[in-house]
Length: 354
Image (cartoon, rainbow, N blue to C red):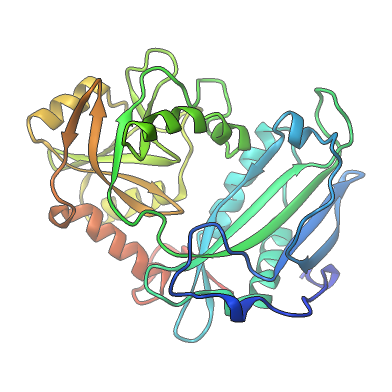
């Protein structure tokens, strides 16, 4: 309770909740009534507050705008039958956010501050958690430089915020992806392992080029030779090939996805053969050609499991089996969803009740 008694709350005068059609929620466009903020200056976190969701005043000289000194996380809450908010792997998201903060010369967020602010904000906007099938409350913690200084140096002042967003499904259909062999998402020694804003901004243009050709997203390859598979869009990527679950091994150019880890944990728990290793484009294409690749999917917070319908490479599309025939990805999605909704036991201690 170190920070809880210090959080001030300014409630909205009129909630927007009655205006929301929860049967039709577009992803990432509707936000709850309130948001949390905290300031870092003088070497400590202070000014903990929950205020009505709305526009903010920031300096036009902040390095967050000019040099991309910002990081974020993403997680979800689901309401159980008793009305509790069940947050999936919140402590792991905090740990990863602090890893990102270290890489971007930003302060660490204390666990008590993170959890107490999250708990207070969710409790205030609890009625915004949708209950429709496939829906959830998306949680976006983020931090950015609050300096008023145009210059390249570590900032001294920061703002930490949390906003909440009721969401439906991220992808409504299986996705079509294209293997990228020119543009690069991340390189060794870079910030690919951190959830830094610039990683995603730089990916928009090559993704748009692929979308113009009829694909939904890219399969990113390594930034040196474009020889090895790394990620898919904004997600980790996995393949079931020869009855083995294969995913690229983590490196400083690949994000350590929370959903990725959850999928691998369940696969090993079920006794499935799992390989975290380099997988070359050549190996993947050969597996597709001989029908050994029976499943391909992205794993991430927004979609959980995003089935890949086809993979394009140098003008040729490689189709995968129909989604309804995919045993592992469908099973792991159902298991994760059941754990998140507390309709099945949580043997790994992933759920935090709020």
